[in-house]
Length: 426
Image (cartoon, rainbow, N blue to C red; front, side):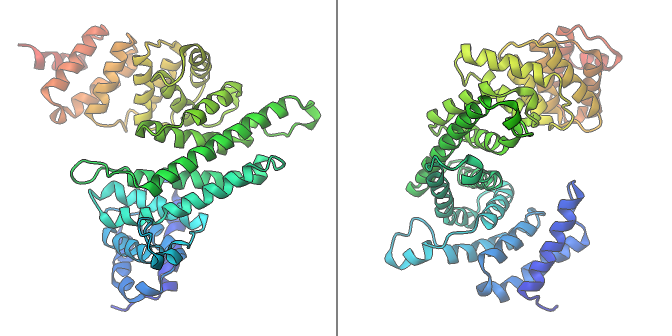
């Protein structure tokens, strides 16, 4: 079969991305997609040395739509990227000029996002990690540039660091740390290289300065007369800074990376926000989960938790993932929070997805949370127990016993539970 040129390969990638991203749903690989991947595998060796960073970002992003079938393509593109950029550990004079190349922010976010998708599939791929390390200097460069602009207090935040630029940089940071912190085949996370540590420190300082600027602008806006305030609420106009900062800080907290000043500034800002003007339900839920995990002093946290509970209970939670539904219940269970409005909203969300619940483990965990909260909702319990019965072959004896115990503790007696009780009877 014929070999495609770079322009033909990138054109095919653009066409694929237009179709898949426009569909707004997961695309299952069909014969045309398989042919696209096979064409990449066949053609890349011939054009390998002619590829530039923009070509790689386009091809890698297209191939990442089907990470389980494009592993060979990913490795080939990672090798080319590593050859062009070098690695931050190579501090030899010969590599200095190579390392000076900075990847454009648009290419950076596309490549890091794609590497993250592939890394989730590959158990231990040296080439993916090496390519990620090559991108660390670019993350540092863009973070340093943004920090220097923020130090110019005469410029407003939106002009110094545009929202789209900031959210792209945060996405690149999250993606690259997912790759670098992924355990290897032995289950160990590799030691953090000095250059990676510098990247973390630079980004933490960027978040701190960004949030500090948000606090300042919020105070300035509060003092303006109504006629001079912009139409968009602060929570909307600054959503990219708030959401991007929170996502990165959450990841750093899980990794144990110290970011105390930035975290304190985030809570100082969040206290000033009006929860009903925050559009992102995911941000509200994730913030609630963090607070319930004890990430804030009780006096300050209690005020924010109350505000979040009242607001989340009014929202439509259908868009949340099943895992997020469990996170909410688990957080409330750990903190012994019995908020009728929130539990009602969660129950409605479960009822709406009765046909697409997660596996047995998720169902058992949700039931245990409901048991811990002493929350009896017959409709939800019926849905969950029926889901267990329909997938009983996948359940372990221990899981069946736990479901039975939850039903008894919640005083739920239904024909769906009779079979479960009989299975665990001595």
